[in-house]
Length: 484
Image (cartoon, rainbow, N blue to C red; front, top):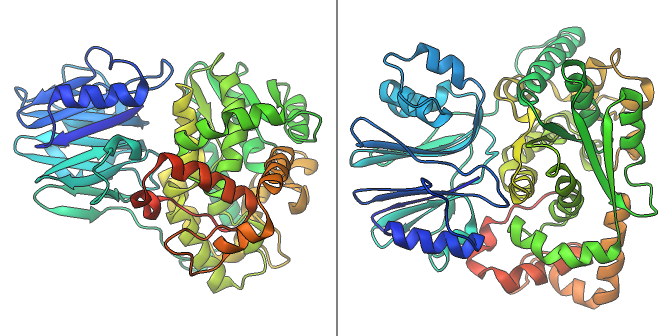
């Protein structure tokens, strides 16, 4: 699901041609709408759901919604009069009729959206930015799109639409969601119970429906999602991918066997990886090392999932919220709190971007329980030592919250073993080592790189060389970078 919205810059036919260039196919019937000088267009990949513009108030209002609103039914029940259409987009537009630009405060979901309101317009993203959105002023008008590549030559004034914000053409850009720091002291048992309740509720919401699959990589967070989901739905399926002949997927298969869930593990060869690497980077619009490495595993696992399910659930954001990365463990409390806040706020440019791009590439609807608004808000207020314990144990509160539900070999597995797709990562590193010398990498490691990005490993250099063949230099500031 992707959106492309033009205000005073393009006709319906121009957007139709642009989408055809992105998808190599014509947009489906009903996916484009022209109202005055505003054109709304939805498109998708590989038979995925295509966002459909919805109109209201005698065609003076229209909405294009990319994503899913979990509380849409509850909102619809409260609306008077109710919209004629029953879609989530129609419900949000109906709520906008009474709440106007404050509408995002009432939405519980994963989304980006655009609303035309007479001569004005409105755009918004969910709190963590699960669905990408970019915008640019072009020749006195505006262009909004889910993908960088949709802007073509309009890159000079291009910006990323900030997560947790809305934009109104008469009021400008406003932030409606902020991560809070640690609040008043809380005892460990209360913190653990809060995490347990909110994670359970988030997983219930994100795994609702039929034809649901889970990306099970063996991490404690993906294992929690699978276990909670399987309690409610015995038809849930799980998926993983790894390099053939490696230990990739070993823990995922073990977890699936313990649960009794139907599990599919995809083994890929080095040749498979290299044959699809350019496509994966084109889809991602990123060259960041960790983002690309995880995307490779996701690509093959989700290709298998797309043959069986319509909704795929991932565990992204847990490492950021609960301090799961190794480099965080030695930090003192104040620095750890600040760094967790920074990487969580940057998720929309890194791993949430990856998750959205790969799921949509296979026509799947994405879910991510650890991006739940209530959960994110509550966990951001917990003290740092509930995330990384004083003895250096990562994701402490999350592990303890489900320690009676899952066996110790899952929740108490050593942090050093909580690493996934090692085989795929090693294969990429070995190939890059055969292509580039240490001297090649050294030219990109310093701060003075003649306008080139700082690259930290040879495989990241490989990804960048592929990226820059397809994307203009102006896109560089928009590429998110993770911390090793």
